[in-house]
Amino acid sequence: MGIREFPGGAPRGKGIATGMRRSPDVSPRRLSDISPQLRQLKYLVVDEAIKEDLKWSRSVEDLTGGPAGLTSIEERILRITGYYGYQPWAASCKREERPRDGPAPAEAPAAAGGSEAGRGSRRCCRCCSGPRLRKLGWGLAVALSVCASWAGTTQLAKRTFRTFDAPFTLTWFATSWNCLFFPLYYVGHACRAPERPSVRQRYRECCRFFGGNGLTLKVFFTKAAPFGVLWTLTNYLYLHAIKKINTTDASVLFCCNKAFVFLLSWIVLRDRFMGVRIVAAILAIAGIVMMTYADGFHSHSVIGIALVVGSASMSALYKVLFKLLLGSAKFGEAALFLSVLGVFNVLFVSCIPVVLYFTRIEYWSPFSDIPWGHLCGFSVLLLTFNVVLNFGIAVTYPTLMSLGIVLSVPVNAVVDHYTTNIVFNGVRVIAIVIIGLGFLLLLLPEEWDVWLVKLLTRLKVRKKEEPAEGGGDLGSGPQNKRRARPSFAR
Image 1 (spheres, rainbow, N blue to C red):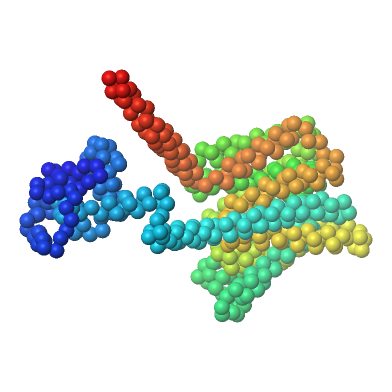
Image 2 (spheres, one colour):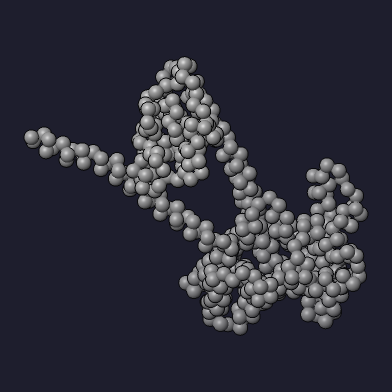
């Protein structure tokens, strides 16, 4: 282009002075007189070299999208042609320089406007950060609830077995309480909904989760019964393992189910491959081996560790099959499904504790010595754990909920330290740390590497900009001094 802008002023043109002001006796120029410049607007490109030379020019900053910006075609025309000395950037320069020197009395309204804009931006930040802070606060509360309920369930089960050595009966009794899931959900939904739907209406809406025909007998045996069996096996194997090993080892080994879920999802569901999750799975397996080695490979501890690993495997299989066969469920659908599992347990699993009692595999006598308080307490805590784990996602992030399971490990360790004769040798501590680290790695989102690269790139750009700005400010002084010394010597 034949037009070049110079720092701190308007473009220089023939017969147009930089300081010219628009006067009423001067007739405005017609658009036909500046048609060449209008055609050049289409091809207006600011060269990179010019940008570097005119780095501190307000005109170039405005052309490249500065704070003032180009708001209309008339501004662009007047800016390029230098018509009547049009300098919109001069006002913006003054506006930016004024706060540095302090506002004058006449400039108080402008400063007040700026403070109002600042308040508006701060108010917007508060609105944006408010829901996140609220969600994080709920996440902390949910994580503590998960930790307390899971640790309490484990410790209370250990204490129950001192007088009631019947893990399968305890599993059946606690699973029967799942029938309360849908009634609890309906009460909460009815309290929040503006129009209270009937129980039958809400039940029919949630039954669509099982298919177009709803919850039929065929669907009950093909879709609900297998998950009922997996649910019972998961809880029974975990409770039976608590009889063999301490609660700390049982809780930390159960955290391996996250690694098993990833491996099964990768194989069965064809989920995205992530190297960091493969590393986490390897850490989980290494932690299992080290945990077994911590007690010297005694048969008592090996059986308990195998039972916990089996429980974690059943839990992972339950989650993967649920996603494969049923997909994702809403809150009401999940509550109905868990209640159906409770009904299945009452109808078809109740005979197993009776058989175990008469075969004296799980025998308790007399009935008056049954610790009903421990049984009901265990069932309430397990129900609370499942309720918070299934419905906590409505108020917080799933990652924070999963952290509650990891936090239960140190809680159980502290309780075991004061109530049992557990020995925390180096191998056991390393195994606990390795399994916990693997669990935390599995909580990383799928795009964590992209976020990490973006964060590192921003940090590098900031580090490059800070020395460049500091060097430019400091370098101008010494250069001027060096140039001044020869003239002073002369």
